[in-house]
Length: 261
Length: 229
Image 1: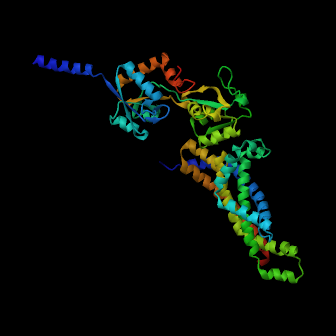
Image 2 (image 1 turned 180 degrees about the vertical axis):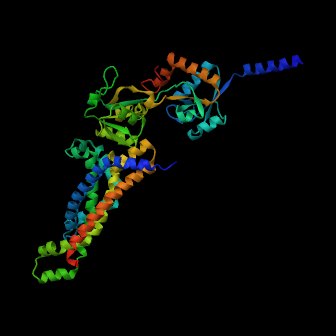
Image 3 (image 1 turned 60 degrees about the horizontal axis):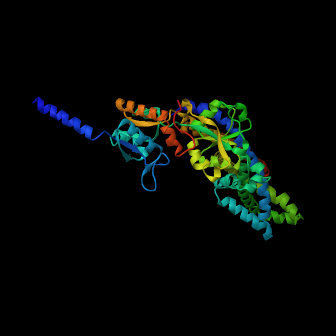
């Protein structure tokens, strides 16, 4: 009897050793440049790089599951996959349903202005230079994290509110606003890296204060997976430290996009 | 979702900061537009094709296209051209306020020109013949007989046009202006309470529309005082 039981236990152990743990990763697969298929159909992007590297560090196999954004959390809860690596921002609302790892990408804001204007909105040490905002009209999208930030930090700023990104860029190019405050990743992809944006540059440092911009983007998982979360956190922190996240970001952007502390 | 009555009471005074801009747009565009309309209608009723045709084309273009499209053309469209940005006109076109004034004025000009034409054509022929019989010249007839009667006939429609312009000024919020609607949209985006906020905005507009109606009613009484008994 004893022999039978122990042989069953043994065969279980052997089975789990032979097929290493498989992590199923949910992502949109259409969210350029974070998770998308390249022209040969291969998954590419920052999320994909992060997921692959995390898997290596925790010793798991990966399979990717493509899932539409609006069904991402329901699919995770329905056990269609084990973790979400899909540029999902960590919010209190989402945290009620799922758990998040340590952030692997921050939410940031930054000013962008014409090179010719030589704006001095920040001092050399990166602190705000309120005087530099005198006579500077700033374009911002209405009711975004950026408008909350500027209303709190530069209450006297001359702000033009826009309902769309396009309109804001048009007015920046027309010179109706002297600078805009926006997400530098989007700004780089759609403007600064294009011929249109040649005469423009980022002004001042990346702004990432958590109370305005949020914690950032993390790996989502079902609640109650504390052991998995600890392993993911450890992997992400080591990837932050050894420069892997920086390397992944710089494949796309000329700057880093992970938490700096 | 509960209805937050206190938020309406709180929001109406905040909208007041936008009333100034809305009224400036309304008054300036009405004055400029009416001046434009008088010129246009004089051209329009002229028997010289070189005068009447351009007026007809102008009226046709601005009555036949949405005002939002016109605002976008003036504000975003023109600014696309470096030549415009380097020109003298950029002083006005750079500023969303003047872009809105231009768009509203040319619209008021086109619509009011047609309203005035209706008034002029509505003047009773018999009264003009009577004036001729009394020995009034052509220009005297136009100034002393046609004009006052035409204005009285056109007043109700003109009142409509002004209320309609009041509502159209809300479009200025799409080009970064802080008129009543612009303020409302910003508060709405902060409070996520569209119902309460836009009800507050509607109340403010109704209030202004009420004043316009009173003004037009008073003007109508004044211009038809000869018929009162």
